[in-house]
Image (cartoon, rainbow, N blue to C red; front, side):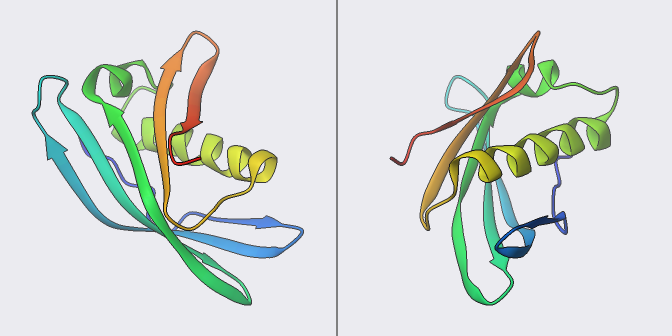
Length: 109
């Protein structure tokens, strides 16, 4: 599995947002979990840092045929989630997927 959303840029009314994937760590603690350390750069504002977590099983359910398409599906949903919910520094987001697509929940609030 090769997951990368590094360099994804999107526009919100507050300006341009760019996702930087600083690191990715694999944990084998029973669920084979991946945690991506992210920095979100926001035009004219301080950057926000946090984490995105998903299991191998969730990755297999992400929409798309290959790693690039699956990563892009998560990036699109993350952009929509941020537009709907906002984002706080120190965020910790869990990612899963089902028949409706990619699901994101905030474990840091």
